[in-house]
Length: 614
Image 1 (cartoon, rainbow, N blue to C red):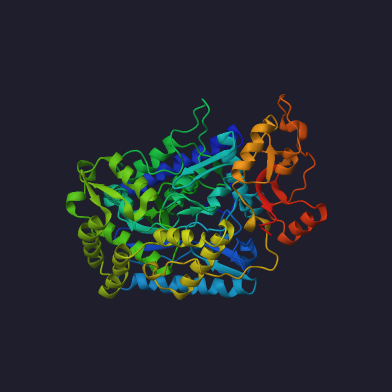
Image 2 (image 1 turned 30 degrees about the vertical axis):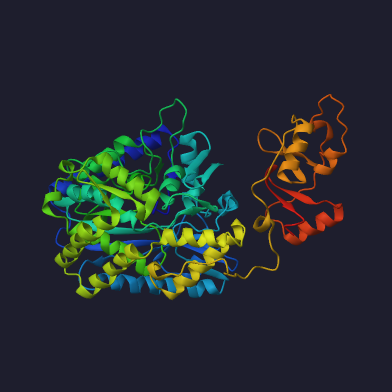
């Protein structure tokens, strides 16, 4: 989706034109490969840094477009949500102090963004999933107002034919229905790129699949979404479901999710990998085209393969093959898409160095990993890593190994040899690989976040616990120390709350409810057992239809015939929205002399506020 102008494919003529250019791109790619035109004498690395924008109260800030204009730097670009931005780092030759150079350049660009952001009361934060994101921030008005994102949203929804269902089960369970792809905006990652010589591409790609599980396990940074404790790297499940064009209907749309690990080893040559994705996934967006790629190639120009790039840009493999052109020379690279953003720049660069080192140091016996590993075990490693992080057991050559043993005894030595082979400085190698070692010995980001959040929940309700956690991430991040040294937060943490506290910060989200057909005698006992005085009444869809109090029920005389709630409940209910202020809530309770306020969003009950909460 890096192209400025894209459009949906709405007619047979448009699809035919797109397919003409797509087939020409594949033919040109084959010719470039067969004629050995790919750059093979230089290996570069690159990265994309996605980041979150937050306001002074630690909630998502919607000023991405304004901030991008103020920064005025081509390294920065938009993301689908208007509370995210992306930094595209310049490629660097893989040698010497390239990793510390990347860290300095990234910190320079982040500092530049932070200075402009401060003038707009905005902060920059690096984290896999921003803890303070709520369903409110997934509404259409939070999508970046650019046509390419609207086209992507409309097209994916049209293919799917129904709303997106998000269901993730970890320690807690999250079940949400949503009408857009904006859940994708919850994810922020640090995408690492490694240039690979064509003759070794398929072997490297398969090896990248093998090491994905162990690398993800020690890099997890996203255990929370909307206050729920889910996977150690919840992004993996969230991203897969947020762009899934398959529906559960009988219509066969696509064979696998557009976000996936894959189902088998890569085979053949690099062109075959791109062909397989064309076979598996329909083309969903197009653009304007000039000459075909073969025509450009015949005229002596290296083509950009725009149609193939558009297709590849809507398939989000965790290890994605990429084609590019630098200084007039075509190249191939593997994009690592599963590493989360944050929690510090040092942690990110250490993750990337570990990956690049393992890729570069692949032992000869792993040239044919398909002879040593079952693909389904490798895929299971990745999913287990996303669920369990550093607690994962990894299948390795038919054995089940503890993560720390595998990393320290096998993979770190492989990475060190690979980095030395590429001429990376010993000082850089020692520094960044020690970050990985200390993380294994002490703590990773997900573990720090889980323990801190649980401690905060002893003092705060979910919303404020998430705000306190976000504030702490920002505080530690600004110091720059790796997450292995961060102190677990305790319940004595204090955060600056705005004067106008919001209802959603203090409301009770777990609400005992009744339905109109419930028997009054039975419900009266239930309220007595539960020691509650107010009970909202909802219909089968969760919409609020009334309210009853224990006082109301105690006044009802029961003479044998059953009495139902529909006969006695109050139907004119005073309510408030979750984004209302606590001051307004107090005024409503005093004005109407009531002890509680149901919290309603779009007619649906989402919580309740009582006098005790005030």
